[in-house]
Length: 218
Image 1 (cartoon, rainbow, N blue to C red):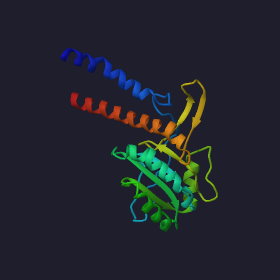
Image 2: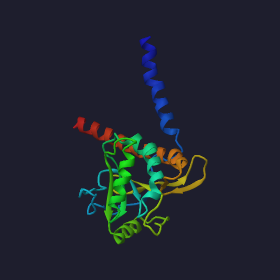
Image 3: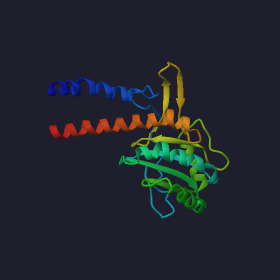
């Protein structure tokens, strides 16, 4: 019995783990970098005056614009499909960018989100419209903000402030490019973004294990 258990741990379990991580849509060993070293947002603040940085955090970044109510459905999708699955990862955060003057609208939105659960490490930061547009331009995205300075897309930013996404061949051998994930489309979040966030979190977990082993050897 013990022999069979040992064989299972040594041979079967690694195969199961491999199949789990390989089962997603994304075929990349690492999530490609689309734009390197985007600006930080630490000069912007929340309604409570709290400053947020993109440094050393895996960030889901969104641009909501003035029409907060328009994006409400997308927030619920994002909460359930992405935030709820990853909120316990200590270096994970959600950051939503909005123009100054929308604080009251955001407060109402946050009250609605409380019905779903806690919002730890989910920040709403405010900046002047010109600053938002300039920051967005610096990300060198194909997509554009609408006239309200919003977009239904959210973006994955790594700990070094690099925009990550899809750029290359998928499992079917087809070329694909994806810089953002549409919060209005549950299929996009479920089929693509869940997998891509999983890839980048696994990347950092692996790096952490390697660093810990190196420290123990020293």
